[in-house]
Image 1 (spheres, rainbow, N blue to C red):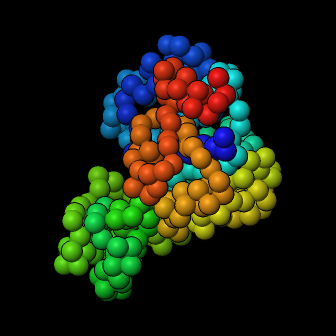
Image 2 (image 1 turned 90 degrees about the vertical axis):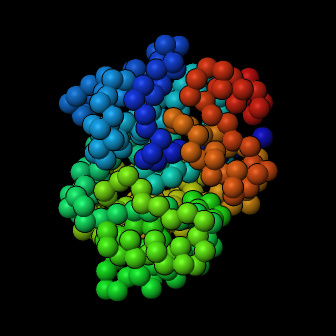
Length: 312
C-alpha cells in the first residue's frame, strides 16, 4: 500500500505528550536527550512537567514538536515499519519531513527550528501581530476580505488548511478588520487565535532574511523520499530546491489542502500522522474522507497502523 507520513506543526504540543510512548519505547527519551544536548536544557523534562506557558513559547514549541515527531519516526522503523512513498509537514512539520527524508540532519534541524522560533518571535513585537481562524467561507472570499481590510497594513490568508478552514495573519488592527469583513461575507466563525506571532505572512520577511544566513551554513542533501512542500504543494527531492522553498515558507501561505490533494493524485492510499495529537487527521477528513489517517503516538495505535499498511 502506498503511504505518506505527515508531520504536524505548532498547536499539537501538550504538557505530558508522549509519556505513555516513553514508558514502552526507550528511543523516545533517547531522541529527546539528543535534542537536549543541542539546546542546553532538558527538553523532555519541560515537555512532561511544563509549565505550559513555557512549552507554548514559539522558540520552545518548535524543537519540542520536531523532536517528538522524529522520535516516533525512529520508533516506526524499530517496530518493523517501512519507509513511505512521500512525506509532508504542516509549517514547522516540514522541517521534520526533511529530517525523515534524510535531506536535513536532526541535530541541525533542532538548531534551525529553535532559531526560527526566536526570529519569528522577534520579528513582530508582542501585541502588534495577530492570527485568526476563518471557518465556513470559500478561500477566495477570505482572500478578498484580507485585501479589503488591509488599508496599507499587512493581512493575508496564510494557512489553507481544509475546505472552509483558512487562517489569516498580519498586523493586529488589519486582522481585526478582516475578521469583521469575513463575518460580513458569511463566515460561520471568525475568531482570533491565542498566538502573538503572525506566521507565514509578509511580516516574517525580515526573519526569513536572518534565517537564510543560518540555512546557508547547513548542508542539505537530496531527499531519499519526495517531500511535498508547503509553498507549492508539489513533491521535491532536489536539495537546493528544498532549501529555497523551506526559506520561502516562512513568509508564504501553507497550501495544506493542495498538498493532501497532491498525495491522493500520486496514489497515496493511507497517511500516518507522525507526531502528537490528531490535528492533521481532522483536517484530512475535511479534505478527502477517502484517505485514512493513522496515528502512531502510542503502542496500540502504532500496531494498528502497521496492520493497516500491511507491514506487521
